[in-house]
Image (cartoon, rainbow, N blue to C red; front, top):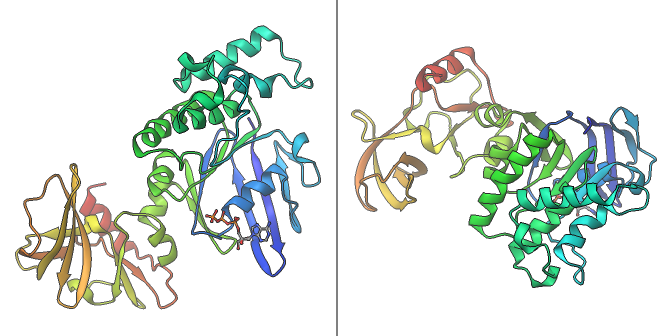
Length: 351
Ligand SMILES: Nc1ncnc2c1ncn2[C@@H]1O[C@H](COP(=O)(O)OP(=O)(O)OP(=O)(O)O)[C@@H](O)[C@H]1O
Protein backbone atom coordinates (compact mmCIF):
# COMPACT_ATOMS: atom_id res chain seq x y z
CA UNK A 1 0.00 0.00 0.00
CA UNK A 2 1.15 3.55 -0.50
CA UNK A 3 0.48 7.20 0.07
CA UNK A 4 -1.44 9.00 -2.69
CA UNK A 5 -1.06 12.72 -3.18
CA UNK A 6 -2.86 15.18 -5.42
CA UNK A 7 -1.23 18.60 -5.68
CA UNK A 8 -2.95 21.64 -7.19
CA UNK A 9 -5.03 19.43 -9.45
CA UNK A 10 -7.53 21.06 -11.82
CA UNK A 11 -9.80 19.40 -14.36
CA UNK A 12 -12.20 21.06 -16.73
CA UNK A 13 -14.82 19.52 -19.04
CA UNK A 14 -15.74 22.22 -21.55
CA UNK A 15 -17.36 24.96 -19.50
CA UNK A 16 -17.45 22.91 -16.30
CA UNK A 17 -14.62 23.26 -13.82
CA UNK A 18 -15.05 19.78 -12.32
CA UNK A 19 -12.01 20.02 -10.02
CA UNK A 20 -10.14 23.14 -8.96
CA UNK A 21 -6.91 23.55 -6.98
CA UNK A 22 -7.29 20.18 -5.30
CA UNK A 23 -4.67 19.29 -2.70
CA UNK A 24 -5.40 15.95 -1.10
CA UNK A 25 -3.18 13.35 0.54
CA UNK A 26 -4.39 9.90 1.42
CA UNK A 27 -1.86 8.47 3.85
CA UNK A 28 -0.47 4.95 3.58
CA UNK A 29 -3.11 2.68 5.15
CA UNK A 30 -5.59 5.51 5.51
CA UNK A 31 -9.31 5.39 4.65
CA UNK A 32 -10.46 8.72 3.22
CA UNK A 33 -14.10 9.25 2.28
CA UNK A 34 -15.17 12.00 -0.11
CA UNK A 35 -18.57 13.54 0.53
CA UNK A 36 -20.43 16.14 -1.49
CA UNK A 37 -23.60 16.70 -3.44
CA UNK A 38 -24.05 15.45 -6.97
CA UNK A 39 -21.65 17.11 -9.39
CA UNK A 40 -19.18 18.15 -6.65
CA UNK A 41 -16.35 16.25 -8.35
CA UNK A 42 -16.07 13.07 -6.28
CA UNK A 43 -15.97 10.59 -9.15
CA UNK A 44 -13.68 12.84 -11.16
CA UNK A 45 -11.22 12.82 -8.24
CA UNK A 46 -11.14 9.02 -8.24
CA UNK A 47 -10.76 8.95 -12.02
CA UNK A 48 -7.84 11.39 -11.80
CA UNK A 49 -6.06 9.08 -9.34
CA UNK A 50 -6.81 6.08 -11.55
CA UNK A 51 -5.50 7.89 -14.62
CA UNK A 52 -8.85 7.64 -16.40
CA UNK A 53 -8.72 11.45 -16.57
CA UNK A 54 -5.64 13.60 -17.12
CA UNK A 55 -5.48 16.77 -15.01
CA UNK A 56 -5.26 20.11 -16.83
CA UNK A 57 -2.93 21.26 -14.09
CA UNK A 58 -1.27 19.88 -10.99
CA UNK A 59 0.20 16.48 -10.34
CA UNK A 60 -0.74 13.08 -8.98
CA UNK A 61 1.77 10.97 -7.06
CA UNK A 62 1.42 7.39 -5.87
CA UNK A 63 3.97 6.09 -3.38
CA UNK A 64 6.12 9.15 -3.97
CA UNK A 65 6.27 8.59 -7.76
CA UNK A 66 4.79 11.22 -10.07
CA UNK A 67 2.23 9.32 -12.16
CA UNK A 68 0.53 12.32 -13.78
CA UNK A 69 1.49 11.15 -17.26
CA UNK A 70 1.30 7.41 -16.56
CA UNK A 71 -1.39 5.25 -18.23
CA UNK A 72 -4.09 3.67 -15.99
CA UNK A 73 -2.82 0.13 -16.56
CA UNK A 74 0.60 1.15 -15.31
CA UNK A 75 -0.72 2.72 -12.13
CA UNK A 76 -0.99 0.38 -9.24
CA UNK A 77 -4.64 1.17 -8.46
CA UNK A 78 -7.83 -0.80 -8.25
CA UNK A 79 -11.27 0.67 -8.94
CA UNK A 80 -14.55 -0.69 -7.55
CA UNK A 81 -17.65 0.75 -9.16
CA UNK A 82 -21.21 1.09 -7.95
CA UNK A 83 -22.42 -1.58 -10.34
CA UNK A 84 -20.72 -4.93 -10.39
CA UNK A 85 -18.83 -5.67 -13.57
CA UNK A 86 -18.26 -9.42 -13.65
CA UNK A 87 -17.52 -11.87 -16.43
CA UNK A 88 -20.97 -13.48 -16.64
CA UNK A 89 -19.86 -16.82 -18.07
CA UNK A 90 -17.07 -17.34 -15.57
CA UNK A 91 -17.51 -19.00 -12.19
CA UNK A 92 -17.17 -16.94 -9.02
CA UNK A 93 -13.77 -18.56 -8.52
CA UNK A 94 -12.55 -17.54 -11.99
CA UNK A 95 -13.92 -14.03 -11.60
CA UNK A 96 -11.94 -13.65 -8.39
CA UNK A 97 -8.82 -15.27 -9.85
CA UNK A 98 -8.90 -13.27 -13.08
CA UNK A 99 -7.03 -10.17 -11.88
CA UNK A 100 -4.28 -12.42 -10.49
CA UNK A 101 -3.81 -14.42 -13.71
CA UNK A 102 -2.57 -11.48 -15.75
CA UNK A 103 0.71 -12.65 -17.30
CA UNK A 104 2.54 -9.62 -15.91
CA UNK A 105 1.81 -10.77 -12.36
CA UNK A 106 3.34 -14.23 -12.73
CA UNK A 107 1.74 -15.48 -9.54
CA UNK A 108 2.05 -19.24 -8.87
CA UNK A 109 -1.27 -21.14 -9.06
CA UNK A 110 -1.04 -22.07 -5.38
CA UNK A 111 -0.77 -18.42 -4.36
CA UNK A 112 -3.74 -17.48 -6.58
CA UNK A 113 -5.83 -20.26 -5.05
CA UNK A 114 -4.92 -19.17 -1.52
CA UNK A 115 -5.84 -15.52 -2.11
CA UNK A 116 -9.11 -16.36 -3.87
CA UNK A 117 -10.22 -18.60 -1.02
CA UNK A 118 -9.16 -16.10 1.65
CA UNK A 119 -11.07 -13.26 0.04
CA UNK A 120 -14.11 -15.47 -0.62
CA UNK A 121 -14.17 -16.37 3.07
CA UNK A 122 -13.81 -12.72 4.11
CA UNK A 123 -16.79 -11.79 1.96
CA UNK A 124 -18.74 -14.91 2.92
CA UNK A 125 -19.06 -16.24 -0.61
CA UNK A 126 -16.84 -19.26 0.03
CA UNK A 127 -19.75 -21.61 -0.67
CA UNK A 128 -20.46 -20.06 -4.06
CA UNK A 129 -17.07 -20.40 -5.73
CA UNK A 130 -18.33 -22.86 -8.34
CA UNK A 131 -21.46 -20.86 -9.22
CA UNK A 132 -21.66 -19.00 -12.48
CA UNK A 133 -21.52 -15.25 -11.81
CA UNK A 134 -24.99 -14.85 -13.29
CA UNK A 135 -26.41 -17.38 -10.85
CA UNK A 136 -25.99 -15.07 -7.86
CA UNK A 137 -28.14 -12.49 -6.12
CA UNK A 138 -27.33 -8.81 -6.69
CA UNK A 139 -25.71 -8.63 -3.27
CA UNK A 140 -23.53 -11.66 -3.96
CA UNK A 141 -22.49 -10.22 -7.34
CA UNK A 142 -21.39 -7.01 -5.67
CA UNK A 143 -19.43 -9.02 -3.10
CA UNK A 144 -17.62 -10.77 -5.94
CA UNK A 145 -16.95 -7.38 -7.55
CA UNK A 146 -15.43 -6.13 -4.29
CA UNK A 147 -13.57 -9.44 -3.94
CA UNK A 148 -11.99 -8.96 -7.38
CA UNK A 149 -10.46 -5.79 -6.03
CA UNK A 150 -9.42 -7.28 -2.70
CA UNK A 151 -7.49 -10.23 -4.18
CA UNK A 152 -5.07 -7.69 -5.51
CA UNK A 153 -2.82 -5.64 -3.27
CA UNK A 154 -2.66 -2.34 -5.14
CA UNK A 155 -1.16 0.89 -3.87
CA UNK A 156 -4.69 2.22 -3.41
CA UNK A 157 -8.29 1.04 -3.69
CA UNK A 158 -10.62 3.56 -5.32
CA UNK A 159 -14.23 2.84 -4.45
CA UNK A 160 -17.16 4.70 -6.00
CA UNK A 161 -20.28 3.98 -3.96
CA UNK A 162 -19.56 0.25 -3.90
CA UNK A 163 -22.39 -0.54 -1.49
CA UNK A 164 -25.13 1.69 -2.85
CA UNK A 165 -26.86 -0.97 -4.95
CA UNK A 166 -27.32 -3.28 -1.96
CA UNK A 167 -30.25 -3.57 0.42
CA UNK A 168 -29.95 -1.95 3.84
CA UNK A 169 -29.03 -5.07 5.83
CA UNK A 170 -26.38 -6.27 3.39
CA UNK A 171 -25.04 -2.77 3.12
CA UNK A 172 -24.56 -2.60 6.86
CA UNK A 173 -22.92 -6.06 6.99
CA UNK A 174 -20.56 -5.26 4.15
CA UNK A 175 -19.72 -1.85 5.57
CA UNK A 176 -18.52 -3.49 8.78
CA UNK A 177 -16.65 -6.21 6.83
CA UNK A 178 -15.03 -3.67 4.55
CA UNK A 179 -13.69 -1.66 7.48
CA UNK A 180 -12.34 -4.79 9.13
CA UNK A 181 -10.68 -5.99 5.93
CA UNK A 182 -9.18 -2.55 5.30
CA UNK A 183 -7.70 -2.51 8.81
CA UNK A 184 -6.38 -6.06 8.51
CA UNK A 185 -4.75 -5.38 5.14
CA UNK A 186 -3.58 -1.89 6.11
CA UNK A 187 -5.15 -0.83 2.82
CA UNK A 188 -5.11 2.71 1.47
CA UNK A 189 -8.64 3.60 0.35
CA UNK A 190 -10.24 6.59 -1.32
CA UNK A 191 -13.98 6.07 -1.15
CA UNK A 192 -16.95 8.02 -2.48
CA UNK A 193 -20.38 7.87 -0.95
CA UNK A 194 -23.58 9.86 -0.48
CA UNK A 195 -24.31 7.91 2.67
CA UNK A 196 -23.20 9.85 5.72
CA UNK A 197 -23.43 6.84 8.00
CA UNK A 198 -20.93 5.09 5.73
CA UNK A 199 -18.75 8.19 5.76
CA UNK A 200 -18.83 8.52 9.55
CA UNK A 201 -18.14 4.86 10.26
CA UNK A 202 -15.62 3.98 7.53
CA UNK A 203 -13.48 7.08 7.33
CA UNK A 204 -10.28 7.92 9.13
CA UNK A 205 -10.83 11.32 7.53
CA UNK A 206 -13.75 12.77 5.61
CA UNK A 207 -13.11 15.24 2.79
CA UNK A 208 -16.01 17.48 1.82
CA UNK A 209 -16.12 18.71 -1.78
CA UNK A 210 -18.08 21.70 -3.07
CA UNK A 211 -18.01 22.55 -6.77
CA UNK A 212 -14.69 20.82 -7.32
CA UNK A 213 -12.99 22.28 -4.25
CA UNK A 214 -12.03 20.53 -1.06
CA UNK A 215 -13.70 22.75 1.53
CA UNK A 216 -12.79 20.74 4.65
CA UNK A 217 -11.00 17.55 5.57
CA UNK A 218 -10.72 16.02 9.01
CA UNK A 219 -11.72 13.16 11.26
CA UNK A 220 -15.45 12.36 11.19
CA UNK A 221 -15.77 13.77 14.67
CA UNK A 222 -13.96 17.02 13.87
CA UNK A 223 -15.98 17.60 10.70
CA UNK A 224 -19.22 16.87 12.53
CA UNK A 225 -18.50 18.91 15.65
CA UNK A 226 -16.46 21.72 14.15
CA UNK A 227 -17.65 22.23 10.57
CA UNK A 228 -15.94 25.20 8.92
CA UNK A 229 -19.15 26.31 7.24
CA UNK A 230 -22.88 25.83 7.02
CA UNK A 231 -22.28 23.92 3.80
CA UNK A 232 -20.19 21.33 5.65
CA UNK A 233 -22.53 21.30 8.67
CA UNK A 234 -25.41 20.34 6.36
CA UNK A 235 -23.49 17.43 4.84
CA UNK A 236 -23.33 15.45 8.09
CA UNK A 237 -26.06 14.67 10.59
CA UNK A 238 -29.40 12.96 10.32
CA UNK A 239 -31.82 14.65 10.68
CA UNK A 240 -30.00 17.54 9.08
CA UNK A 241 -28.80 20.42 11.28
CA UNK A 242 -31.47 23.12 11.75
CA UNK A 243 -30.28 26.59 10.67
CA UNK A 244 -32.03 29.57 12.22
CA UNK A 245 -31.49 33.33 12.54
CA UNK A 246 -29.27 34.38 15.46
CA UNK A 247 -31.35 34.89 18.58
CA UNK A 248 -33.73 32.01 17.85
CA UNK A 249 -34.68 29.33 20.36
CA UNK A 250 -33.53 31.39 23.32
CA UNK A 251 -29.83 31.00 22.46
CA UNK A 252 -28.32 34.27 23.61
CA UNK A 253 -24.64 33.67 24.43
CA UNK A 254 -23.26 34.02 20.90
CA UNK A 255 -20.01 35.46 19.60
CA UNK A 256 -20.02 38.86 17.88
CA UNK A 257 -20.86 38.66 14.18
CA UNK A 258 -23.20 35.69 14.52
CA UNK A 259 -25.78 35.79 11.76
CA UNK A 260 -27.26 32.32 12.01
CA UNK A 261 -27.08 29.43 14.40
CA UNK A 262 -26.99 25.73 13.64
CA UNK A 263 -28.62 23.34 16.08
CA UNK A 264 -28.10 19.60 15.84
CA UNK A 265 -31.15 17.48 16.56
CA UNK A 266 -29.49 15.79 19.54
CA UNK A 267 -28.81 19.19 21.13
CA UNK A 268 -32.49 19.98 21.64
CA UNK A 269 -33.70 19.07 25.09
CA UNK A 270 -37.40 18.45 25.67
CA UNK A 271 -39.57 18.89 28.74
CA UNK A 272 -37.31 21.68 29.99
CA UNK A 273 -38.53 23.83 32.86
CA UNK A 274 -38.28 27.41 31.61
CA UNK A 275 -37.96 26.15 28.01
CA UNK A 276 -39.87 27.47 25.01
CA UNK A 277 -43.38 26.23 24.27
CA UNK A 278 -43.36 23.65 21.48
CA UNK A 279 -45.69 21.23 19.73
CA UNK A 280 -44.68 17.86 18.32
CA UNK A 281 -45.78 17.82 14.66
CA UNK A 282 -44.48 14.36 13.81
CA UNK A 283 -42.92 11.64 15.94
CA UNK A 284 -40.93 8.83 14.31
CA UNK A 285 -40.04 5.92 16.57
CA UNK A 286 -36.93 4.31 15.07
CA UNK A 287 -36.22 1.86 17.89
CA UNK A 288 -32.98 3.09 19.42
CA UNK A 289 -34.02 6.69 18.92
CA UNK A 290 -37.00 8.91 18.22
CA UNK A 291 -37.02 11.75 15.68
CA UNK A 292 -39.45 14.54 16.51
CA UNK A 293 -40.37 17.48 14.32
CA UNK A 294 -41.27 20.35 16.62
CA UNK A 295 -43.04 23.61 15.97
CA UNK A 296 -41.66 26.38 18.16
CA UNK A 297 -43.57 29.57 17.40
CA UNK A 298 -43.04 30.12 13.68
CA UNK A 299 -40.05 27.77 13.49
CA UNK A 300 -39.75 24.06 12.86
CA UNK A 301 -36.87 22.08 14.31
CA UNK A 302 -35.89 18.45 14.45
CA UNK A 303 -35.09 16.86 17.80
CA UNK A 304 -33.48 13.47 18.31
CA UNK A 305 -34.31 11.64 21.52
CA UNK A 306 -32.77 8.45 22.83
CA UNK A 307 -34.91 5.30 22.95
CA UNK A 308 -38.68 5.22 22.50
CA UNK A 309 -39.62 8.69 23.70
CA UNK A 310 -43.12 8.73 25.21
CA UNK A 311 -44.32 11.55 22.98
CA UNK A 312 -47.09 11.67 20.41
CA UNK A 313 -47.82 13.92 17.46
CA UNK A 314 -49.95 16.86 18.62
CA UNK A 315 -48.57 16.81 22.17
CA UNK A 316 -47.21 19.99 23.70
CA UNK A 317 -43.86 20.20 25.42
CA UNK A 318 -41.12 22.68 26.22
CA UNK A 319 -37.75 22.80 24.50
CA UNK A 320 -34.31 24.30 25.10
CA UNK A 321 -30.96 24.09 23.31
CA UNK A 322 -28.25 22.29 25.27
CA UNK A 323 -26.07 25.06 26.75
CA UNK A 324 -23.12 25.92 24.52
CA UNK A 325 -24.16 23.44 21.83
CA UNK A 326 -25.43 25.84 19.14
CA UNK A 327 -22.94 26.47 16.32
CA UNK A 328 -22.50 30.11 15.30
CA UNK A 329 -22.14 31.20 11.66
CA UNK A 330 -21.44 34.60 10.12
CA UNK A 331 -23.34 36.17 7.22
CA UNK A 332 -21.15 34.25 4.69
CA UNK A 333 -21.96 30.95 6.37
CA UNK A 334 -18.52 30.52 7.97
CA UNK A 335 -18.48 29.13 11.45
CA UNK A 336 -17.27 31.46 14.16
CA UNK A 337 -15.14 29.64 16.66
CA UNK A 338 -15.02 31.00 20.15
CA UNK A 339 -13.09 29.36 22.92
CA UNK A 340 -15.79 30.05 25.44
CA UNK A 341 -18.36 28.46 23.22
CA UNK A 342 -16.33 25.34 22.61
CA UNK A 343 -15.44 24.94 26.26
CA UNK A 344 -19.08 25.20 27.24
CA UNK A 345 -19.90 22.69 24.56
CA UNK A 346 -17.33 20.26 25.89
CA UNK A 347 -18.61 20.77 29.42
CA UNK A 348 -22.14 20.11 28.15
CA UNK A 349 -21.06 16.76 26.70
CA UNK A 350 -18.63 15.89 29.46
CA UNK A 351 -15.84 15.26 26.94
N1 LIG B 1 -16.79 13.26 -19.11
C1 LIG B 1 -17.39 14.38 -18.73
N2 LIG B 1 -17.78 15.30 -19.63
C2 LIG B 1 -18.36 16.45 -19.27
N3 LIG B 1 -18.61 16.80 -18.00
C3 LIG B 1 -18.26 15.94 -17.05
C4 LIG B 1 -17.64 14.67 -17.34
N4 LIG B 1 -17.41 14.03 -16.18
C5 LIG B 1 -17.86 14.85 -15.21
N5 LIG B 1 -18.37 15.98 -15.71
C6 LIG B 1 -18.92 17.11 -14.93
O1 LIG B 1 -17.99 17.41 -13.90
C7 LIG B 1 -18.67 17.71 -12.68
C8 LIG B 1 -18.22 16.75 -11.59
O2 LIG B 1 -18.69 15.45 -11.91
P1 LIG B 1 -18.46 14.18 -10.98
O3 LIG B 1 -19.02 12.99 -11.70
O4 LIG B 1 -17.05 14.13 -10.56
O5 LIG B 1 -19.38 14.55 -9.72
P2 LIG B 1 -19.78 13.64 -8.47
O6 LIG B 1 -19.49 14.46 -7.28
O7 LIG B 1 -19.12 12.32 -8.56
O8 LIG B 1 -21.34 13.50 -8.68
P3 LIG B 1 -22.33 12.26 -8.37
O9 LIG B 1 -22.52 12.28 -6.89
O10 LIG B 1 -23.56 12.62 -9.11
O11 LIG B 1 -21.65 11.02 -8.89
C9 LIG B 1 -20.15 17.63 -12.99
O12 LIG B 1 -20.62 18.93 -13.28
C10 LIG B 1 -20.20 16.75 -14.22
O13 LIG B 1 -21.35 17.06 -15.01
